[in-house]
Each structure stands twice: as structure tokens, then as C-alpha cells.
Length: 174
Figure 1 (cartoon, rainbow, N blue to C red):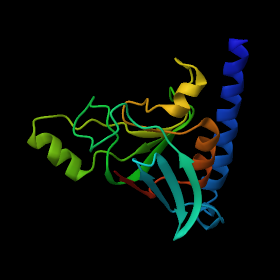
Figure 2: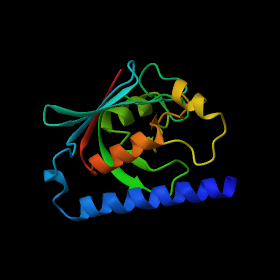
Figure 3: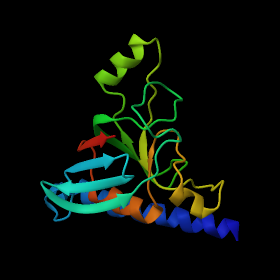
Figure 4: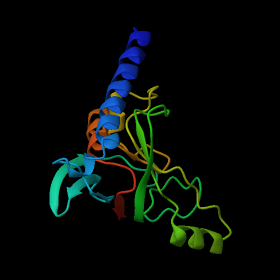
């Protein structure tokens, strides 16, 4: 049964990646109604919003780092960064159900960390649930559980994946 569950997840990943590739590689993706040109996250509200101009396209509940309050200061502090970034690249084969890298750290993050003699960290992602769940599914929808990433349900991750493209801005607010 466990093997079959992994096969279903693999098929879902492949399907989502194929659909996304069709839109992104067509060059017309940015003109598709419903394609986001900006992502906004409000950490205190645990919400991610997709916008096209001023029009709200979608609202999603997110889980954050284990230590969600405050700005990410250094590697391994389990905080989700705050600031202005871009969506950098996509990964269909991560340890999580799809992932999109956030361009953290920016120059301000690097300067702040180095001033204190710390490494700023990196590999901040927007992603779905772990491919190998370590807790009951309800845990992931009620708890901040990441190392500093922004996590969505798998269904929401597919939607965010398909409605965004690389290099669009993401603003993460407290």
C-alpha cells in the first residue's frame, strides 16, 4: 500500500510539472488570465496571496519555520525570512511535493548576518508536504513545521506552481 501511495505522488508530480512546463515554455504564460505576477506572504496571518496587478487571484494557508516570529538572522535558526525576494527556480524532485526556491538571502540579509559573524543560510523554498510524512497529516495543517520554508498543502502547491513563474517578486511580511 505504501508503494502505491508513492506511485500516486510521483504521477501527481509529473502531471503538475508537465502542465507547468507547457505554460512556462509557451512564452504566453504571463498573459494567461490567472497568471500571478506577484506573491505576498503575511507570516502572522499564515497566508500566501497571489496577485495579478492589484487583482487577488488566490489565498492559501501556509506553515512556516519552527520559530516563525522575527526575521531570519542566520542558518539553522528555523525562521522564515522577511523581505523582498524573487521566485528563483523550480524542483519537481525535492524531498517535498514540488518546490519553488525563494532568492533568500538578499544583500540586506547577507550584510546583517555577516555583521554578526553568521552564515545567512539559504535554500528557502515554497513547497508542499514531505514526500515521506513523519507525522499524522493533521500535524502539517495545524503546526509551523519547516526549517524556515513556506509550506502549503499539496493541492495548494499545485495551484501556486501552475499560477506562478520564475523571477516574479515575493514579498514576505511579519
